[in-house]
Image 1 (cartoon, one colour):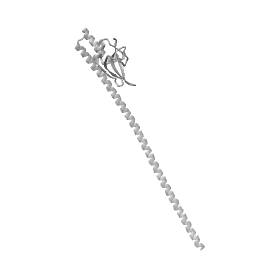
Image 2 (cartoon, rainbow, N blue to C red; image 1 turned 135 degrees about the vertical axis):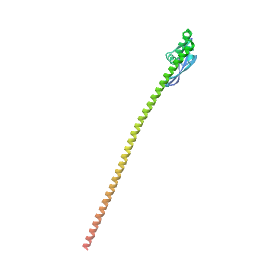
Image 3 (cartoon, rainbow, N blue to C red; image 1 turned 45 degrees about the vertical axis):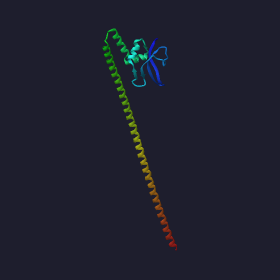
Image 4 (tube, one colour; image 1 turned 120 degrees about the horizontal axis):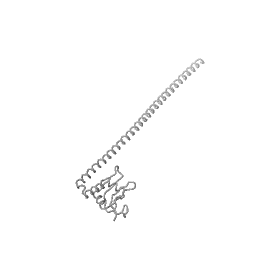
Length: 198
């Protein structure tokens, strides 16, 4: 029975989530499988990969053929290297301890690279957040300045309107006083004329 190590799709539309499985080549993509070897989640950055390296090596040694994507994942997690080292041990080129040392050294180096990538991503995110915050502060400062200008213009307009109203009231009072004076003068003239006539 030909066996392939391949991805089995799960997850909702637009958010794929994969199982890494060893399955019969004749089975459907998301159908029956022989062994679940791990998971692969491409939605995170960097992608989340959990793999049973020893199980994958066992299937590879038994002749399972990985698909292109599965091969890339197996290579990334070190399953192909471990199979290669196991071949060297079988041929007598290496001892079990040397192979284990080489594999652990490779794992440490790989973890260092992944951690460096995670750190650079978090730094980039923080820089992006700081930039967005600065832009927001600028917009807020501009908005506050415009609000202050509008408030000053309003108070200025209110003061001018009040001054105009006061000036108008004083003009009205002056006109009324003048009219009263004219009326009083006219009344006095009328009285004097009446006295002359009498």
